[in-house]
Image 1 (cartoon, chains in turn brown, yellow):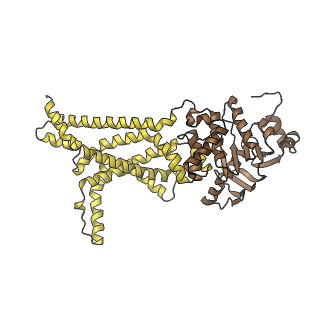
Image 2: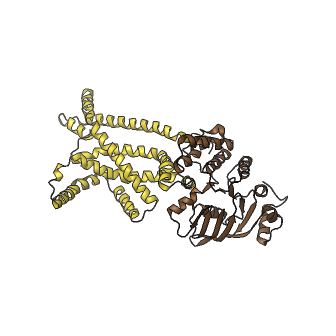
Image 3: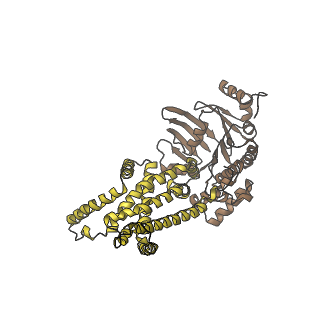
Amino acid sequence: MIRLQGIEKSFGRHPMLKGIDLEIGTGEVVVILGPSGSGKTTLLRCLNFLEKPNAGRIRVGDYEVDCRTAGKKEIQQLRLRTAMVFQQYNLFRHKTALENVMEGLLVVRKLPKREAREQSVQLLEKVGLGGKLDAYPSQLSGGQQQRVGIARALALNPEVILFDEPTSALDPELVGEVLSVIRKIAKEGITMIVVTHEMGFAQDVANHVVFMDEGKVVEEGHPNRLFSSPKEERTRQFLKRITPDGVYSI
Amino acid sequence: MKLDPSFIWKAFVELLSVVPTTLLITVVSVACGLLIGTAIALIRTFRVPVLHPVAAAYVTFFRGTPMITHLLLIYFGMPLIVDGVSAFFGWPFRSSAIPMIAFALLSFSITAGAYASEVVRSGLIAVSKGQLEAAYSIGMTTPQALRRIVFPQAFAASLPNITQLFIGMLHGSTLAFAVSVVEINAKAQIVAATNWKFFDAYLAAALIFWGLTVLIERAAGLLERRIQLYNRGGVA
């Protein structure tokens, strides 16, 4: 279970998150929607302290921290329980696909090399890259890099995987392969929080949709309910703009 | 004026005997310089309190003054400090016991440290922030992330500049003559002093420096190709 209470974050004098409360059950697939600048990505990055929240409490599984007082140790504990898939993949450029996945197992989990290798090969096979073990990121397509990124996140067996616009940097024809991998692991019951603009994905896979605007949660609920009968005017406006039936589609 | 090939050859052979001195000065100053430079670059990159302005001052002073000035400052300043400390504690040690080359090694290391800090800093900047974030996201500590993720890439990115530093220090090592260290250039002067064929002797010295530089370039080229292996792919 993940619980956020009163998360606040500002950049300089500009408040980005104005007190976010959110509860996420184990195994839930949460999609965070919202216009750009609404704080979705910032919220995600606060969860593993890539951005340090100014206030609030974060609970992941059995571990809870007070953001105001969290030190190195607390942050480390939080990061051991989370993993992230980045918009720009951020694979370790000087390491092969296999080494990218093994890195966390070797250095953080301190597994013996053989075991780490075995697990990593399995994960890469799972994301359809069993044949690319020794390829460097620069030799892989965007879609393949992102799938390595997903395998790297899975390797740590985290309580939750945070996806930060995982398909936004991809060529349109590569989006499908990444989404289908995310779909596949969603079905395995791994808790996921996904910031995305893929409405189709949100409708099919999510079982919890959060709509944010101007640093606040405007509305949340099951996708069927939220998409068909949003309560808030702001949500309605957003949904109308993002799914403008027949106007254009990319 | 006529060139004397047989004397050039004789000078060349004699100069070879002091190549180890030149290489010692170069290698020690670059190695120490890279250590100092890495520390300085990290302090400046992470803006370590207290040390950060000290590091900035070090870089601006030593980049802002000539290498030979550093050598002379060390040469005339160090004995004062050493003898003062020695006298204070009642040790028998006197600065006159310090070998001349030690002044050159110390001084050039400090010079190289200032240059190297910018080389290392440019390498660190070349590694995208996302690399560090990815390392953090899988639970690495900052030292782990630096050692395993950032440094290898920063090193690869700064190799051409490190080579440049190496060559610069090789040629700069000639300044050691100012404190009576006999390296290649000083030896050329000594060899020529017997028959006044300075041009021939310095020509031999030039050939040796050129040869050493080509060797450094070749070695760096090989290392670069090996280390940059991961950048060979076509797609970004």
